[in-house]
Image 1 (spheres, rainbow, N blue to C red):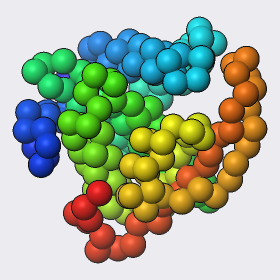
Image 2: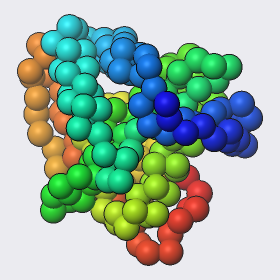
Image 3: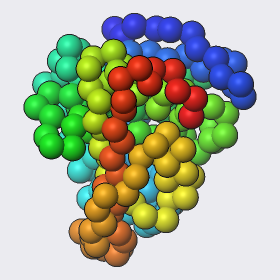
Amino acid sequence: MGNRVMCSSAVQTDVEIHQGYEPGLIGRVGELHGRYYAAAWGSGAPFEILVTRELCDFIADYDPKSDLVLSAHINGMLVGSISIVGRNPGPDGAQLRFFIVDPAYHGRGAGKLLLATALDWCLDHDIHSVFLWTVDHLHQSRKLYEKAGFRVIERCPDDRYTIHHDNLKMKLTLPKGNRGKPL
């Protein structure tokens, strides 16, 4: 079971952050991605299968010394998740993955708290460069990433899921001594 820490933000005071795998996490995070992206840009089973398969692979090889998985819970329900793949970092650093918050809980601070906790973990583990892939036109997500300091470094057209969209690669360099920077 993962570690549990009660956290609060200015908006939502009952967000609990759990660290590490716990039963139900894979299915719930896969479901959140499938439902959210179907509504946002019309993805279907191929996208949900891909995300869930990649999450399964991540959890199967999970090393808490170099990787992180966090989940946000409100009233005992898993409402969001974020992961850092820190093993074998490439030239752009560790990868931020599987970041999702149930739309019913948007605007309540769970996403900000997940991202801030993950970036603090990166600094605590001497990871000072983090990248992610997102889809263009997800304005709330992009605003959150840019407020944290991420910048677009690459744009790639993608039509693998029958819907054309642009993928954005975003990168953040975390300087030493940056822990606790407000989002």
